[in-house]
Each structure stands twice: as C-alpha cells, then as structure tokens.
View (cartoon, rainbow, N blue to C red):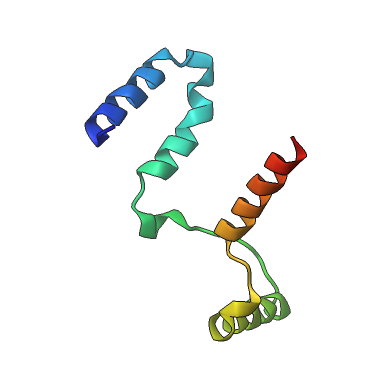
Length: 86
C-alpha cells in the first residue's frame, strides 16, 4: 500500500470516530505528527544521585552494547514465546 492510500484510509477512520472518543485519540495523533526530534520530552524532578545513575547506565550501554538486549530482540522473544504456548 502506498502512503497516499494509507493516509486516505486513516482519515476515513478518523471520520468514523464518535465525538466522545476524539479527545482520546488527539494526543496520539499529535505525537505521531511531530518530527522525530521533537517527540521525546521527559519532565522529572530527579535528584542528583538519580541523574548520576542514569548517566552511568548510558555510558555503560555506549561502551558495552553487548551487555544489553535491544527492544527488537525482546519483542521477537516475546512473540516466539506466545507462539510456543499455543
């Protein structure tokens, strides 16, 4: 399916959403419409020690990526486990 066809299909779905549910989908559509660079906003009140833990974890992942599991691998493993349980 090409992008134009998909956009038309999605717009049809939006037109069919009951008014009572429009407010529910607005944040998701707004998020998806943003540029990738503008998407990640994390507002927290982390302590200095919490920030240090995060910084150390990021450094460890950068220096030793072999010690970490990607989300793609976790998702694939989860899907495989579901298939074997059936």
